[in-house]
Image (cartoon, rainbow, N blue to C red):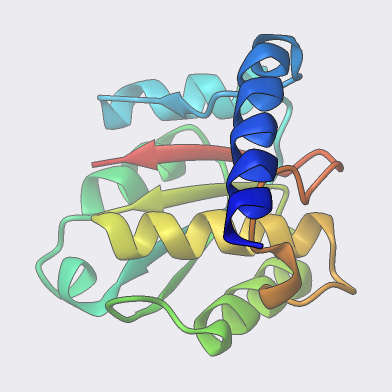
Length: 153
């Protein structure tokens, strides 16, 4: 039995490796300057932004330059700052609710890995609202287009 499983796994890996270059992946754009974000957002015709971060980053005032850049470009935004280390499904659900209630069409993940994970999971849940995060586990589970996502580290 173990031998058959090994053959199956190796076959899957080989086939997946061959097909991978032809899959329509969308690489998230990493923006290294807060000043460049409004231009990217406007170019993509987004109207309202959800910033996903954590309480520590917000209390330190690290999001203030981003907020100021968005205000100067007259781009409305809202902030979800309740992300915890290793974000929970509750974090994702709260962020998704805020995204939908505020009528957002863009997500900015601001901070470390937890904020990024929460932003990615929120985008996945927005694309497939009827599917739980547990069922999205794995490769090639989301076929719908995610909302525009930008990353700030």
